[in-house]
Length: 384
Image 1 (cartoon, rainbow, N blue to C red):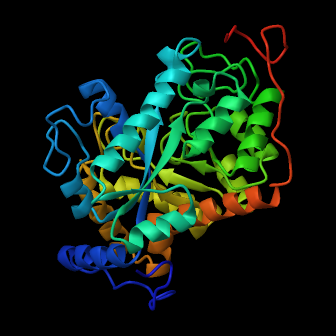
Image 2 (image 1 turned 180 degrees about the vertical axis):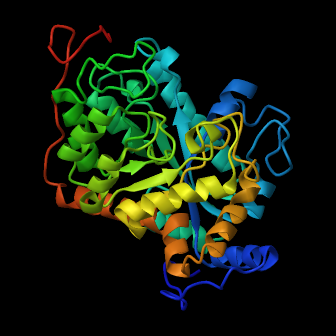
């Protein structure tokens, strides 16, 4: 396996190759350099379609599964070698049973990784990713989608890390007592970004070695997180606000801060975040990659498709077998192999390594023990 080593580094790929040649070149690059996607909601599909049953339902991921955008044949056809599985918890569980549901999402992910161990290999570190790829397995990592699932508990955050979670999206589409979402139904921002407790959450994630994910959060929360973090951040499934002015996308002011932070925006295939319409094209999605690179450089863009988390996808990218068609578009745009390797996985791999390095540097610091209670000024609602 070649990891970020390419004899063609710095050489421009082709000159407007024909479609077949571009696709062939895309596959060659992807077979030699791992594609690591930042966001796939297959665990939630197990919950919503099969009540978290992995061993006692008739679904077989080794065959085409019509009710999914993800299965093993299509992952292999799509040249996927690494996947952050989103262990998502709906905002409807906030202040109720979010911690239990989060545990169940982690459990269902570990179950399907174990059941299909000929294909998947659990990964918690950058070394684990390399080991999985060397074994011809799909490195399987977990990312929590929604900080409400820690129930305002740093202890819960630490235990989720122990269970293998390697990023947490600070909010989903609901405010937490300590962080503002971009898209809370109330259209309010009670914390003005991150509260003091929210900044402690970011600091504890740095200490643990858990990536801070800023998809779904408000711009003020993005700014506060970037002011607080000692490590690069990610946007696990977001695009450029300048090209589609959805609040789920990343404004230029934040992209500019990623130059110094070293973080990465992983582009989302959902049309309302690509074109601000109900349909979008591969060319329009590639425009987001172009634009993000134009602001913060080759090192700040990746892929977080959001398969099985959305009902519609960019035309030509309808399921996980289609990644090579996006990469073929980058070949057509004369991206160098080095640039493509960074987009498909090199950048997020580098961020994970840097997050691990920060955690190593902080390993003598004790766990943070700051707690919020209903009488504290940090909290706007009772979460106990």
